[in-house]
Amino acid sequence: MKVLTLVLLTSFAFGQGVDITINYESDLADYQFLNGQLNKYSVFFDGESHHVSSNETRHFNLFRYLYHNNGVRTYIKEYDFQVGYYINKYIQTGDVSWIGKGPSKEAVEFYKQLREFNASLPDSEKIIFISVDAYGFRDTEVFLGKMTQDKGQQPDVVKQVLDILKPIKKTHSTGLGMDIRGKDKNSIMTKIESARKIVVENREAFEKYFATDYLFFHLLVFNKATELRDEKNLALNFTAFSKLRNIGNYYLHYGNLHCQLKSNWFADIVNNSIEFKGKVCSFTAQYRDSEYWFFGTKKETDFGIINSGNYSKRLIETLIKESSSDCTLFSAKNLGQGIEKGTDYIYFLKNQKAMESYYKGED
Image (cartoon, rainbow, N blue to C red; front, side, top):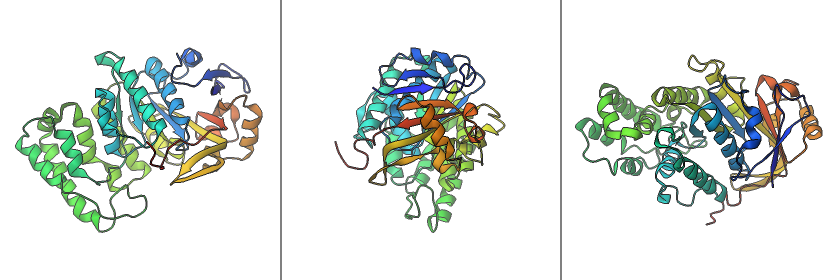
C-alpha cells in the first residue's frame, strides 16, 4: 500500500507529516488537514515526471479533494487537445469506445475512476476534462466528424468553417510534431485565420450548434499552441478557455517544468496574468530509485523537479533524511534552499514503478 506524507506549510513544523493512503478507495479523510490552507488559490498545477505508475492515483486523489474543498470543476491534462476531447466524452457518457485501449492500463483505470466520480455528481456540479495543449492536425476530418455526428443539420456558416478545417493535415515531422512548422505553416495558418474570422463574426451560431462541445471546438480553431507550442501560448490557451468555461476552479496535471512558479514557465505566466494574479498553487515532484518510460525505453534513475530545475542537489539529501514513506509531500517554504521560489509543495517519491504497458502495445 502506497502512503504519502505531507508536511504542512503552516500547521506543522519541518520534518513532521501526515500519512495519507493513496488508492482509489480513499475517503479523503486524511486530507482534511489541508482545509483552509488553499482558499486563496483558484488554479492548481500538479506536476510529475511522466509515465510513472502511481502518478494517476496521486493526481486523482488531490483533484477529488480540491473538488470537494476548493471548488475545482475542471481537470486539465497535458494531452493533445483531441485526446482530451475523447476522454471527456467518455467521462460524460460512459461509452468506452471513446477511449479504446488507452496509452496504458493505469491511464485507462484513471479514466474509469474519473467517469465513476463524475457519474456520482449532480448534473449541476459535474466536472469536465479538457486539454489545452497543441492540436496535431493528424486526422482533422475524422475528429470533426465525430464531434458533429449527432448534432443534426449544420447552419451554412458552420458548414463553411468545417469545409475549411477538415482538409487540414500537417505533413512535417519536426521535433515532437505537436505544432505546425516548416512548409505547413503558411498554408495551414491561412486556412485557420479564415475560419477564425467566420467564427468570430458568427459566434452565436457556433455556440448554438456545438452546445456543450463549443468549448472544445473553440480550442480547435483558436489554439495558440498549435501555432507554436511554448509556455506563453499554453497560458493563452488556458486563460482564453477559463473565460469561456467560467465555472469553478481549475486543476492542471502537467509535467514538472510546466508547473514551476518561475522563469516564465506555464504556471508562472498564469500566476502573473491579469486573470489569475497570485492565485496559482504549484505542486511538483522528485523521484528516487524509481522507473518510468521514455520513448519506449524503461529507465531506472533519480529524476524530477530538482534534477531538471537547477535546484541544489543538497535538497535530495534533505528529502531522503526527512521522508518517512515511499511518497512524502513537503512544504517548499520549509525546505528552503531556493526551491520555494519555484513551487509551493514538492512530492518526494521512492521505489515507484513505471506504467505497466506504456508504449508496449499490450491489451
